[in-house]
Structure formats: structure tokens, C-alpha cells
Image 1 (spheres, helix red, strand yellow):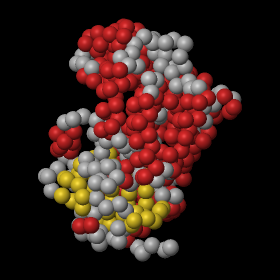
Image 2 (tube, helix red, strand yellow):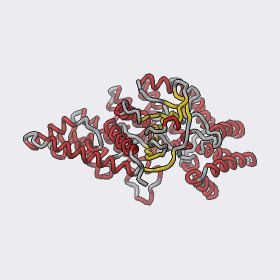
Image 3 (tube, rainbow, N blue to C red):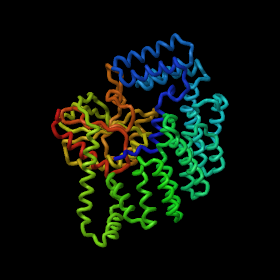
Image 4 (tube, rainbow, N blue to C red):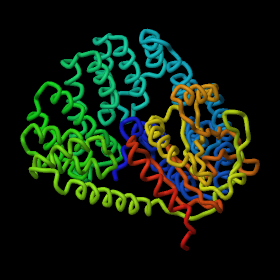
Length: 496
């Protein structure tokens, strides 16, 4: 099963990369960062605490802006938010032209602006105060802002300003992240003529990086290709809506030949072109791929194609039984990769009602933890599936779902969380991950080793973590089936 992260998650992953990894580094700086990354990956809690103390101490002896920027970056990644925030203020005051000062302005001023005109004024101040270095190989921070500005103009129907700012983007590997949201808005406004060249540019950029010789590929080229199937599918949808099914079919088959390992991600669009071309058997085969991913929405179309190919519905029930068996087997094979066995760190957190909920109080139950945040789109896209999965066990007193709200960025996060849950009518038991451990100073996500969200843990009745999942899919049917397999497996005694 392919877990679909999508453009937004790819953006989140890129944004989470340490500053140093995206910036040209001297050999000494590179060596230092490699050591810091090693401690982040492999260090004990004591080693990480020691590293944080060393970073803070180093800034007190240094006049180098690089040392301050490195400390702010890694303190944040170590989960030392208060120390990072405090040092960020000091760095901004001491080095007003630093990247830390610039990023603070973007976060605290630019993103607070309402409306495209106000954002444009703020952006002009940004580039006047912290000019773009066109010779730099890392201007991604400016592209985040430019993409946001272009989208704001598109939202307000100002096509010319939106296109102008898209033209100001610096990093080709990331350009599609600005182009595609604007193109989508134009499509929603019925402006296909303006949208199509933007989508095509995104496709061309992705193909450029995909075609690079292996020895020339790096993290940026890998990122550039992540959204490629989505860009192609969007273009195909436009052509299909225009009745150009054969042109759409040609585009998809070209894309599949370029990234054959991602062929299944095109199946939703591919089958339409194949059916339009009269290639019914191949169309049915693409729907089978979708079905085996746990998406059953096209089951009626599958029945129709099956009958057309076989002349009757004879054997249809057995046909679906076989596919259901294959899907369950695929899920069981998949969850084996997530299996682990270790004691779950204890916790006691507050729910939306202000009540304390502890892991100890849930002993004897299978507990599912889902770490999420209101800004995390992949987390939110998985919620309909998690809601359906929870509904399967609403009468099972031995199973408890807990949705751990973590890593929120807004001071009013509690209000935002309550509003989000109520607006979407989610019957979730939500806990706020804002209580730091007295010994380690860590929030619960850090204690569980969470490095990206969404992250899910399945804990057995004895308090042991049995499964750990990262990433997400918006596929409701698949999530239901996967969670059922995970929970039922966790109910059984562990085989050491």
C-alpha cells in the first residue's frame, strides 16, 4: 500500500530540514552539523540535554552569527522550545540582519497580515531589509513567502499580480509548490487558460529533476519529484473534463514510463482514459489496483466492466472475494514492517474538558495514540478514516483512541483545537501535549521519539508499544481496515 503524503506533507518535511542542510556550508561547519545530527538521531536523553547546554554556552562565547543560528535551529529540533525562543530574541536583537531576525519577521509580521495588499507591503519591507541573494543556492525561505503572496492575490481574483509574483520565485525544485495552489484557484474560478501553463510548468520542472543522472540527484531533486503524479493527474482531469480523453491517456502513459515505480498513483485517472479508448480490460486492471489499495468507491464501475468483458456476472462474487483476501494479506504484510515491542512512556495529559487522562488509568485496554496538529494537513486528511476506525470499536470497552494535539504554533492553540474539533464534529478524545516531563523537560511527543506528524502508536493492554506508524493516507476504507488489523493484533499476546 502506498501512503500518500501529498504536496503539503512534502512541504512540511522540507520546512523541517535543518537550516544548515539547505545552505552552502564550509567543511568545518559541515562536520559540526554532521555531529549534531548524529546526536539528534542516536543520542540518549542525557546526550541531547548536554548538547543543548553546549549550544547555549557556545553562543555566550561567540560573536559569530552562524553559531547563534545553529543554536536556534538545533535547540528547536531538540525540543527545547523555550531555550530556542529565548535565544531567537537575543539573536534578533544582536544580529538584526541575520536570517533568524528575518525569519522572525516573516513568522510574526508577514504571516499576520490580512489581505494581499497588506502582505505585499510587508513583503517589500522584507526584501528591502533582508535582500534576496540571487547567487545563493538557497532562497527557499523567500519562495515560501512569494508563494503565499501569489496565492493571496489569486484568492482575490487578481490574476496579473499572482502571475507576477510566481515569476519572482527563486528555487526551481520548489517552484511547483507556488504554481499548483494558484493554478488550482484559477481552475476553481473557471480560468483554465491561465491555469494550464502553470500546471505544465510544474510538470516540466519535476520531469527535469526526475531525468537527472543518478549521480547528480540530491535531496532537492528527490523533493521535486514527490508531487509529480499529482501534477500530472490534475492536468489529466482538466483534459478529461474538456473531452480530450485520448490526449489525457497519452500524458499518463508518458508519465508512467518515466516513473514506473509510481504507476499505481495514476490509476484513478488512467482507467478513465483507457475506458474512453475502448481498452476495457486494462481499465478494469487499473480499478483493481485502486481496490487493492482499500478504495471501494469504484466498485460499481468494476462490476460494469467485469460484466462487459465476461458477458454476465457469473463469478463476480468470487472475483471480489479473492481481491478482499489479497487486500487483507497486503495489509497484514504491511503492518509487520511497523511492529515493535517496548514499554510505552507514561503520561498524564489534560483533555478538552480539563480532565486528566493517564496511560496508567488505561491499563487493560488497547490504546491508539494519534499525534496531530491543527496546521498538519496530512493529519487532518486522515481524520475521516480515523473517525471511521474509531466507530468500529465504539462498543468495545477494551479499545481507547486518544488524539494527542502537539507542536501547535499559535498561543491560542487550545481555542483553535476546540473550534476545529467542534466544527468537524469529530467524536475524539483529544489530549493537549503541553506538559513537560519533570526530569527530561520533554513533551510527550519527544518522549515517544516523534520526529514528524502524523504519528500513531498502538499500545497493548500491558502498556507496551506494539506498532508505530508514520505518514498518512486520506483513504477512509484503508485506514479502517489497517487499524482493525493493528488493534486485533495488539489484543493478542506478544510472541517474543
